[in-house]
Amino acid sequence: MICANDVSGGQVFGQDHNALQLFWQNGEKTLPLAEKNTLADALVSEIVARYRQ
Image (cartoon, rainbow, N blue to C red):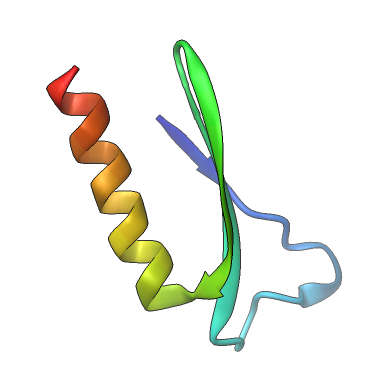
């Protein structure tokens, strides 16, 4: 899995919110703008879901 975020304009550094784009072999998913702690939880959930497939 590859996780990417848009860092253009420095909008994510020093901020409490972010968004992620996830890519894996057969798909992709966007995690929309949210608090970074919320994104971390969602990312771990996605990793677990892919691992269990």
